[in-house]
Image 1 (tube, rainbow, N blue to C red):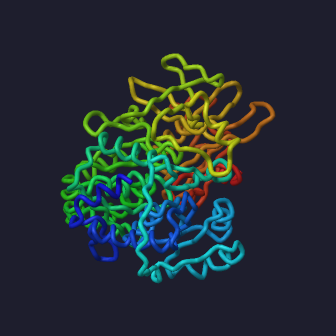
Image 2 (image 1 turned 30 degrees about the horizontal axis):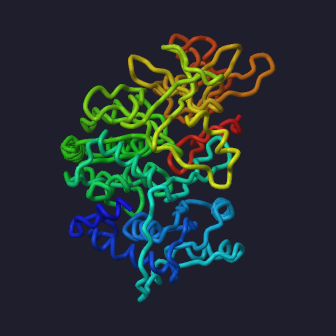
Length: 490
């Protein structure tokens, strides 16, 4: 396994910072080897057995993940925020042989493990004197089962092989200029490609240092961003919005210190949801950093990215990453003409192997070797612009095809609105009508005033027919708005 071989070249380098301690690659290799031997129980190979893990981000998480890989298993990360019903769903779907859990999650998991006859193994009891040889792991073997975000349908288990992971991290290494002396702060959950692949695995692949915080707190994150020790930071738009709010509440002397330190970092990235232009522009004003926006998904890793060097265009996700082929197609899977929108199709070594126990879904996801993303985009002056999910973000109203993301971007610039979500509601006359759900800065404005303001910014058929104001928009753990739940607000 290449990531293990690479780690063995520099055992004395620091790999992970967590719990106020720095751990070396050598310590990580030793701990993961111990865990692998415990999981093997004298067997020669786990042969892609599923091993679920519910471990907080940090050294233990990486040790368990690598231990599963080194024993020949597939890691199934469980979200720390999952309620019991979602934990049951993942465990029932993947039928793991073992669940490895940190002590704080044992009581939550024990009833589920007992119901399904699954062994529960605490992280603080993973000690063994056995020393069986570890198997050789071919890159075609499964490494992870990650679940789709479930924003449009029931989550599906995505099998990502070691070869997929290697392709994903090598293309990001080339595109984003990763170096061994990089130091990144990871504040994202470790059950999704953003935190697992883009940050953790890519950092360790390159011999860099990945630092974890116990949980996201704006004060703690700004403390690290302001330390001048970090070189990279990656987050989702919701986190950047919270960091902006915290920054603006500080006295000028603190703001100046944080700004100076942030300007010395070499790269900041945003992803997992559309980056509002207002956040991009405010962050650049505050920190001197123009966020690099990119596009990817669980099944493909990253596919498109604004450049490390060159124009990072607001509202766009750049061009294909190294080794990634992209097509835009119509509903007959024919390439669209220049300037037309189409569904993104991807072909690359990055693309996942299959959906777990879903052969029909796997077959439907591919057309002649190209993966159907379900996302719509258009190319504008050489850069891709995401229009949204074909199922929830492309509205069909009165014969027009509308992008919910385009309409949202306009309403985010209204001074009284904090954030917005646009959905299509069924309508007998128009097919769908545009509906806007919004959170507000302070006082709730009149809907008519909102529409008057928007009339010179949007075509009449793009204006919302219904508007509702809410305290918070429904989001998943990565901050992505869950559109079906927005529909329910109406």
